[in-house]
Structure formats: structure tokens, C-alpha cells
Length: 343
Ligand code: FES
Ligand SMILES: [Fe+2]
Image (tube, rainbow, N blue to C red; front, side):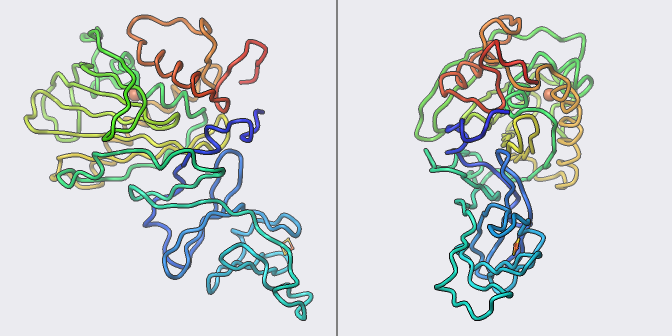
């Protein structure tokens, strides 16, 4: 498998690992990113940490140990690490002072933004992505998922950008077989102080029998899609039949391995009537229809080799996304050479 170390793009990007409110002060949880086992934990004062989930002594998972007074003790021999990851106590040699101990857990950067905890395993090339709809006080925010998917992140992003499957995968909700034609739409790259940089598709129209949890009739819906990071895409949708209704759906992927991914979704929308549960149920329905599709594409990693898969004009956004990943020299979760026959 491709080593995450070979992919400096993802190594130096921020990835979501948890909903911030689920990690209470003085608690820890195991996680994973780019094939690296992590323990995510919070000090009593609220500071968040991300460490490699591996004791330097004999490799035991620290997340199975105990967190007490901002120190983690390994469950195997009790070595205890302070908030900087330095060993400060070895029970079998209690006479050793902290200054004599050399063991150091590998630590990573961790931050909170958009109600999620983000980690960077390398040196951040940029700040956490721009999601201006989240900062719009007129929009309500709801967190959906996470959904664990046995596929690569790029296959999941590409599916998120695809409209031609609505009538087949989401029939009766986001599409129907009598309205399968997709109108032409525009795709361009952007670099913007408000939205960040990446590629976007605009003036994308779909006929949807039930475009959101409030919709009672079918409607033409105008979509915009933007890709702002290799593993982040945000769409906005405005149904013509619901005046003033606005909704942004942001997709943030946590790459567990090259072909397994944890999916986090944040809604920012004008629907203040439905309960959180109703909004999540609607999103669950849609996402769980997409899941068997992306888990059964071959290969699971997204082919970036021109001509590896047949495309049509309607696939313009998907092709732009593939070029975007190629230009960034992404290596993880994609196929870049004909010799590479892994799934
Ligand atoms: S493996 Fe952690 S203390 Fe020995
Ligand atoms: Fe879908």
C-alpha cells in the first residue's frame, strides 16, 4: 500500500476526527487517520491533544490506558505521560526522576473548528478549510454521521459531486426516472477571499421529488458544488418552489486507510422547523443509498490516469476534480500509474 508519508498533500492537511462536543474535558478516544492510530484527548482545561496511540515502551495502545490529571498511563506497565507526551513516571523504577526519562509519545497538531476536532499529521500547508456558510448566523447547523465507508476518500467526493445518479440511487427523493437529463453547467477554478480556493460547478439544475426534509412537492433545484480541499466538498441547494430556503451541505472526509473512510457531514440551512433527528434521518437515508455504490466501484481508489474510465460531457465536474487531484500530486486513495493494480 502507498505510505501516507508518500503523500505530503494529505500529510500536511487538516482532517476531522471527532465532533468536538463528544470529547468532554478529561476524556480520551481512539481514532485513526492516514493509517496512523491516534488517541484524541482533552485536558481538564479543555485543550485538545492528538497523539500516536502507541506507547514508546512496547507499543501498547495508550487509549486503552487511563487518563487522570492530564496524564495518560499505559495499561501494560503503567508508564505515565504528561500533556506534552513526555514520560514522567515508570512504576517499575519509581526512583527515576522525570529529568532522567527519555520516552516521548509522538504528538500531532489538533484544533477545533466548525464543531469538529481536526488533526494534522505533518506541517500544515494551509489553515483549516473555508466554510463561510458555517459562520453565517442566519443558518442553523446540524452535524450528521459519521458514516464509515469501505472506499477511498476521492471516490466518495466524486460521488458527492455527481448529479446523474440521482434518479437511480435516490429515486423518489433526489431524482426520478422521467427526469434524468442534466442541463449543461459551468465548471471553473476559483481563488476567493470568502470561499478559499479550488474548483466549483455552478448553475447545476436537477428535478427533485423531495429535495429536503421540509419539501412537500417536487421542484427544480439549483445546485452549486465546490471542492476546497482534496477531501472536502461543499454543495449548496436552492429549491425554486421554496422561496428563501437555503442549504449548504459540507462533506469532510477522514481517511482511515486508502480504502476506508469516515465521513462527517455538516448542514448549514434555513430549516428551523425540523428536529435535529429529522434532519439527520433524511441525510442518513441519502448517504446510506450512496454507500453501497462507492463500496462496490472498482478499483476502490480513484483512477487519475486519463482514459482509465469512460466519461461524458456531464462528467465535467468529476473530470475537473480528477485534474485538481492530479495537479496537487495526490497519491493516497488514487491510482496514478497503469502498473498499479491494487484495488
Ligand atoms: S508498553 Fe506501555 S508501559 Fe510498557
Ligand atoms: Fe448520492
